[in-house]
Image 1 (cartoon, rainbow, N blue to C red):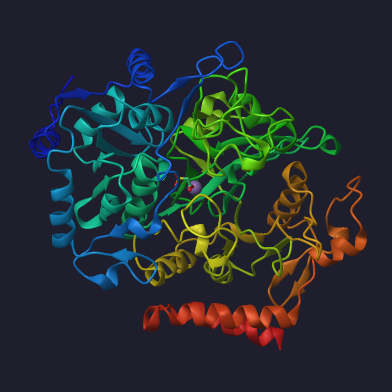
Image 2: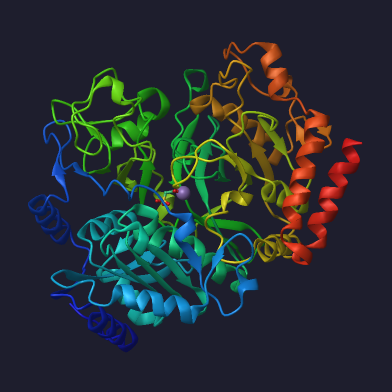
Length: 580
Ligand code: SAT
Ligand code: MN
């Protein structure tokens, strides 16, 4: 296979000249190709076979121990003007970045195969979908891209029709953290990544293309590329709603997208459109529609069990690539929170003893095709996307943020999104559990200045009078003994129902300084057995603590200088005034 697209041919030739691969392979995306890659990796030890009786076609990949998460400090946006990327990104001048990367890429594929991966983000025939080509020397990346994107022949045909594509060059290099960089050149629609084989650093269709580059393009073209799951909720009466929800990495997007209605909710159905990324466009009627650009899930494994997420638990029993989980004596994958068994080897392949601590890496992952999800919605393949009723923001916050509240309107909702803060998780290297500002859960992924991004969000208020309602949720409140106050998981449907009822104007709410909150009586809490005092605490607004929070938000905005949209400041002032 090769291509009629001259720009692509030239880029592949130029890249081969620089990186000096032994051979070039154009990926067609076929099942046979996937199988031969698996075979190749079983031979090299890149993949290990798991128990093929209980986990058919499941494999384990052990990454380099220094290469287990995204590396935000090594991730750069390279634009001529530093001001374009804002204080929310690391910046490097394009000339300097190119020089550095050319040096690192020179000869890096000697003895290796250069794979050309044409891929499409979004349903192959969707006007909202966009194509890219990733060049990589990692068969693990090819196999993952096959699951995570519409990859191969059809994508290449679309590229040949349209002529445009995002270029992504990746090499695992020598895996040295000192020679690891993830660079984005939005003006050149180019991504370059070296020194890491880990998901978000190496599967360039995901965070690099579908969020960092796409957010840049979305701003220019009038749409939104967001770190959001998309979920369909169907009532027993057959009424359907689509919700898009933004939470930081490892805060439960996958679980919410695959929620299983609790026993109390017979007749309710929940289906998954996407679990990580949403591309949102206004249609000609002013309705915001969402597509999921991905075709698979790259999800956090630890904590997955039949109680927390039966759908995920079942879907990863076959045809799954596991990365950095532990292994049992039966050669089954194992992770913390799976079951009562004990593993024999940890994620690095070392013998495991109880005193050693976690056996699976806390950021261990599964890669699995979306179609394996028992709650998969075929609308994930609908070129038109799904109409969004509500946008939900949330974070992991022990204190302060109530279980749920609704923004007054779109502009206030943009402030709610811009104010998201969350405790850090193992999805990125660095300290875990510290609260940091993560606006719209996009801190690591917005490809340009957040101040311009918020202005872009605000601009939608003038474009449509049918915009979704905006909400904020927090499943992670803890009492003074550190116990979670809300049961979460399937019971989150009760919160989603209040959200939907608010969108339909049929649920009551209390008007507070921070927005509309339900009274406990406004939610269906039947059979939950939650202590009324706990419920009151979950739905309380602590004026003193919120005043402090607003100070924090205001100081955070100060970091963006005079670029902060005045409307955002005005929204903040309004909340402040209401708090008294
Ligand atoms: O960045 S990844 O896509 O690898 C996972 C995440 O952090 O959301
Ligand atoms: Mn994510």
